[in-house]
Image (tube, rainbow, N blue to C red; front, top):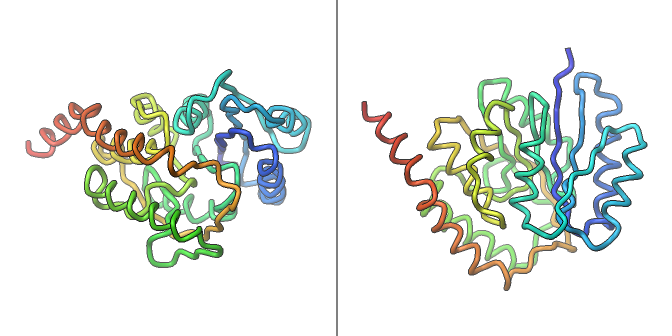
Length: 249
């Protein structure tokens, strides 16, 4: 039987990049009947033609649905909206720019079939391939963020922010239902919760290509992101304490 898969794509002013990602996704699944796929695009208060673009795809061969926020809430909150609306046995969230190609899904799915609850794409483990690097300032800041994330929250995960993560349906609501971070650090929060709630996380090497038209404003996210990393520990201290108590029994 076909495995049902929901793909969640957060989108904020993505009319220039989303179409190509949907085209590649449709082409990939056209010859793979083992997957029964629906796509949820979460329009996070876009002011361009993102919604109109998705409306055209709703009449295409790929099952695409549009969810939306009236005003911009942040990438983390857009992902949360889509994940909590997902119905597939497997749920993938991926970035609108398609920096990680949909073909990498197979490797993540193999990890779930082998027993993992969550499989995350990684640019920082052996076997990964960076096909086009980020500008040096952005790459350095990304590595610094990953280092701080390991120190504060997830010491055993090398790459928390690659926008390509696959979940078993059973893990989605317990994690995203607890989410409080709306911005860029939401990945760290979800992984922090996953580890403390006992879900197994597999970090899988993927190919990745930088998109030069990134929507992330580094100057505007540094301080809020550092604040959110600290907030994660305090917001979920009861989860951590309860899980640690269970492990010591």
